[in-house]
Length: 100
Image 1 (spheres, rainbow, N blue to C red):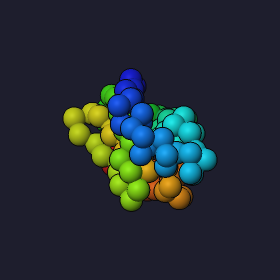
Image 2 (image 1 turned 120 degrees about the horizontal axis):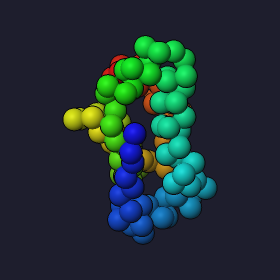
Image 3 (image 1 turned 90 degrees about the vertical axis):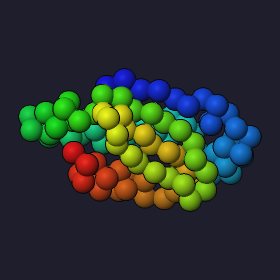
């Protein structure tokens, strides 16, 4: 799985302000997606096959307050980050189970 960072969105002054206010980091916010996908792959061969078949790339982008989104289209997962979101790992789990 390859990845891409929408650097322009993360460098936006509004993104930088929200990140500072939330005491968050880009890596801390985004690495959870990799952790969840890795967990699915390690859980068994069927999970690994679903991931391999479905996900080819992950794009990380900042969206702003209330705009957290997970989307899958054409093998690309897009994760739109809201640094103020809570229970992000739980939301990722639910979304991945529904979409894989």
